[in-house]
Amino acid sequence: MTTGFANPVSDLELQRMVMKHRRRMVNTMLEFLILNYLRKGSLCGYDIIKLLHDKFRVLLSPGQVYPVIDSMTEMGLIHKEQKGRMTLLRLSGQGEELAKAWRSELDLIQLQLDSIASETLPVF
Image (tube, rainbow, N blue to C red; front, side):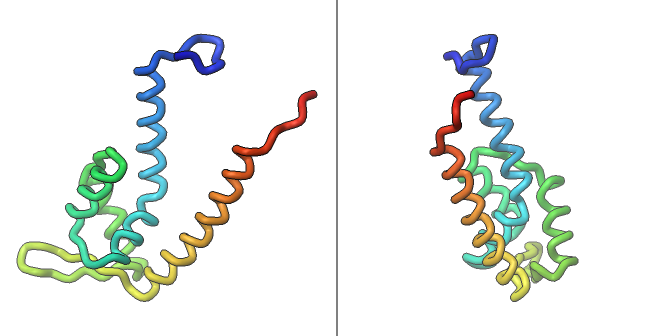
């Protein structure tokens, strides 16, 4: 497969580039994704890692996810509740409000991306 680059890109190289981009996107959006998963109910950290893997085919390590959860807890976005050996996470009121605000912002960004993708640029 060629892409318009000076050197042709193989299908495997293109797939690797897409997966690398997907991983960066999931990492960048991790707080947003966690808040939105918790809007649906209480989860533990392992559940979040599994949901991310199932949905995006990106396997994040506990070392990537748990520090974000801890930070979000310190900011008051998430509450932790010990249930036996498991720590359940649930959304706080502040986390709910932030999830809604981020969703609105993401919708606006998506409109802009759609606009850019569909517009034709002038030829000079």
